[in-house]
Image (cartoon, rainbow, N blue to C red; front, side, top):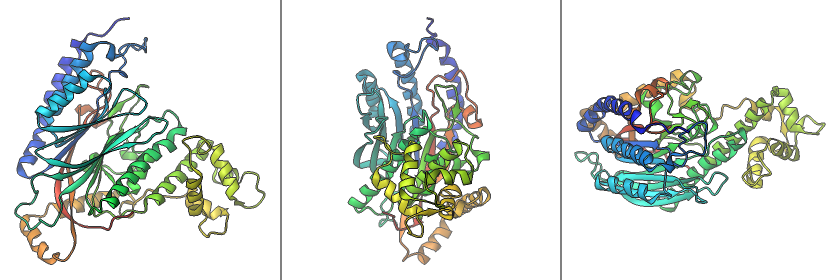
Length: 478
């Protein structure tokens, strides 16, 4: 077995870093021009998972201190050069005290307060979130354990801006707070894990709603960061879109939800050699009207059912017949529906759909509440449903128009804003964000390419710059 020489990859990374930092001058100029918030998410590839020899899969970077120490030092160098307000890391080797101490010390010396959370069942890696003291004070912190097949976890932070974003405006009544989540979803090894991945996101959103309700919080922006292990074409992406979240990178680059824009960028080369975009920073502003969470969840499960039926090469009529099971009538019974879910692998296991979740699905599918699902209801709820399309983004052109309109509204000059403040004096306002810019590193991934000599990780770090804005407040949905 031949171990690759560490020094071979360093010059290339250094050159890419210089190019990246030159690009980041744009970020610096914008930060000087106005108060802004930056956020970085990065799966740093735990040394216990980094393979050094394709022929010997047991040879991992964790066996060679010189290798993992040097690579993680370069990762921290990059993070400190970027100096984001918030840093969300995944696959941090929390089982190694020396590595953890290095991150905590170097980030701490640079003004960050850090929070770490290991995956359950001693998996060895976990999450680390760092918040810069100059930007935010942490009001509360919560660990989220999914307790599922993948031993995945999430972190929830409630933070408040240290310095008001609008000191010259009459904005003392607007709390400049937000919620931040850092997570890493399970990898979709096969289609049977779709429901587990969807449940992980559902649990995160449930946790957020419960936290807001229990603490009687006013509406505020929510930022979800992490490695979502799924692309823009997946159920997780569509589920979050149905809840009003927007992908910050796609928003900054005016990409739409269409298939044509699905592969414009990548952020990961997985262990199978495939490249895809899986790292997201999601933003939900308080002016977004959201459908009830349970409704979005049911719609997403119906979409998974449709995907499984289509995967079996069934036509619309044959799919309906499959759900009917042995019934001779022209409708689907509840018992037939339950049997079909079990055959599709969505129920019956320890992490499948619960009886309560199945009851909720059936209640939504049986539109007229007559106790059965006829062909029209099957079409509307499962086969022809466009559940994740938002009203204002029903097609790519309207989505782009809305992005442009949002920029026009937010970029109004100070005189226009002051005039409108008088007119909106009685309207309840909330603190939110506009996406100003977003950058992936190395630059090649923004063109859908993966450079072979990039060695910091098997993921690309994503950094987004947000600018604060006052928004009319929508009522929260609990």
